[in-house]
Image (cartoon, rainbow, N blue to C red; front, side):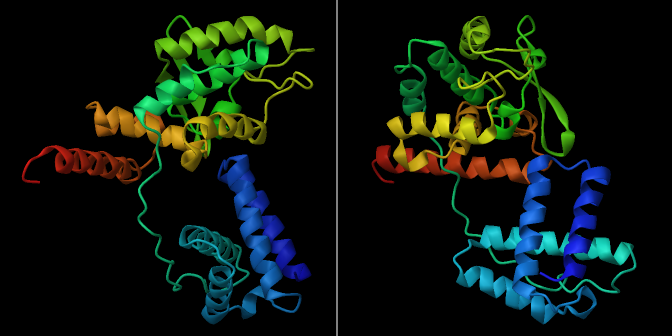
Length: 295
């Protein structure tokens, strides 16, 4: 990586942290994407010399290394944003990433867990201690709200209003939303809040804490917890995001309004939520073909 490119990447990261109110995960993604590009371009490449051909070569190398079209598209979007910043700073005159075609993502439907498997998961056996109570509360809250794993991990104890059965979530772009808590999740949370003090060794605002030191349970730690439980009921959908997909799919299957689901998920665009209608329609077609005598 050239010193010049490294310096401009650092300036760009500082810019999005201060002016775009970007989440920590977004900042890390931008930093990783741009540093990967900088390593590819080497020590002797100046930003003013970069061309569309250079960007295409980088994208080609990502594809050859096995990155998915979606991941390649994210790298390209990061480069476009980076060069827009450099143009605003009057460091370059044009954006070489602008005319590069974004790789087409495959239109795979979101993986989700069946309602029966979710019931088996949530009604299944948990450890008979504070850790088991915590784990059940995490899973119940995850399925009850459809929140992102980073949103659940960042919850504080005062984000819950048990009386109103509401949860305050800070989503992408620091956008706040209020979502309802189901009765099963409320019951599990009540038990966890009563047991939480057994894990805490000092003052801690985080709702979910780890058993090792009583501090906030990290996203990585929560991901490991959820993946372990998911593997018991559906090994093919052990990514924690499958619970969020399941929440949306099951809501739509039971007649929920698409815009209401959009609000609950915290999607800024209705188009993002609409992918779940394809899952529901596919399920309806499968049921139809299996039940209709002339299907």
